[in-house]
Length: 229
Image (cartoon, rainbow, N blue to C red; front, side):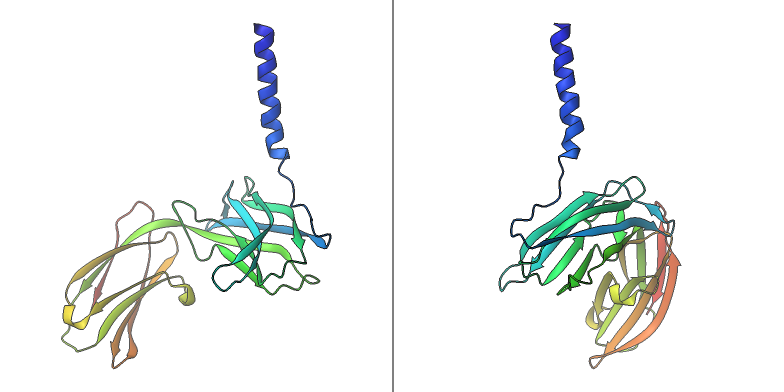
């Protein structure tokens, strides 16, 4: 009985050891393929700490009229330092609109962009070796809107951005003039870096910047900012 148990254990250990090693690169079926190096990192700012065991998926994507078509290039997970370094196979007969390198959303983290796209790639000069993704720890922010003025406007709205990254603003909400009153809004933002609050009023379809404020939010803290408008 002991001998039988030892055999079973040995088989289980062998299968577990070979499961990861069986993860191979994509096989070239067309005969016109190239191998590319795929390197980069997934890190948390501002500390620079790497995120381990995060999936990295690389695909060729062809835009369609109703849906997109994909062809896998390769995939791996980041190592304990948050870095990835593997090889992928690109089928040059597949007329890709772009190459997609994507990181899935991570629980308890916020990121600016979890996908990099290389449009209409030139395979002769393709470089996928500097693919760095940035995440932030997640924090909660409460905005208290205090109606203290008597001016007239069509629309009032607030934007929140991370640092000075205005193009990738994540949160926006509106208060119509007819409903202008005190209000409280709560949303998630990035911890340990500045969250900027942009306050606008819209008059005759023209947006006028009223004010800009900022604060650093912390994890597991009651982060609050008051806006008088």
